[in-house]
Image (cartoon, rainbow, N blue to C red; front, side):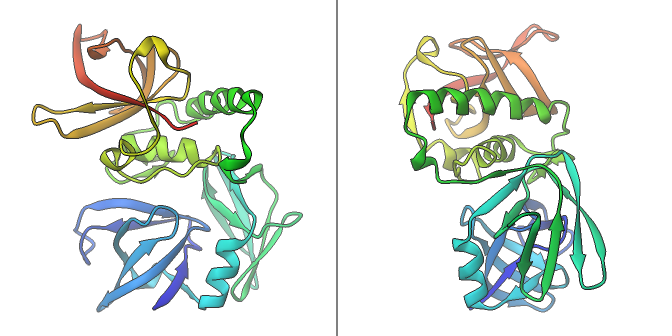
Length: 269
């Protein structure tokens, strides 16, 4: 088995080994993956962050040794909190833009080493410490408040199937990135995320940051958003915006109708 890391701003992950195949997710700078197979110039990968599988162009992959993969995977990792920021790569003094939520494994005082490269990052970042360390009630309250603040960074970001960046993301990619910024790992798709966390029975019992899931006529989970409070939800549908919500679902005030039917609510923090 081979191992790799994204040293591009973003690498699209596709459902099949073809540039015309739909994008199912994205790998952001600094995120790791395992190589599961190959088809000509395409690599079948499993992303280390959420175990999601798909195909990336071999030309965009940076292959690293197993020992380097393990070192980076186990390193203290920082997450970028600037909407867009530059990172410098040596040798060659290459400048690369990276987006909100990118990973910086092993960052120490602006510098990190990955494979044969050194990087300098002078932007804002948070230490992606384990959620298990957030146990005090005050920590939980602060985390929920920070989730709401981070969500507003993505306001008006356009919907893009498979996206995870401020320049385009889908509903589950949006909430996954919000929780990544706040030290909690969510799975990639809405139906997978619905299997995580603690069930909350009523909107009246919710806290900011709880996730609301919505289904279609066949009962399949098709949408997710994050509650700002007991009456409002922020979600990516067309773009990232805020809508009213009640026990029936999301209400679109412009069109005077419900657009999503509420299925369940989960608490992740």
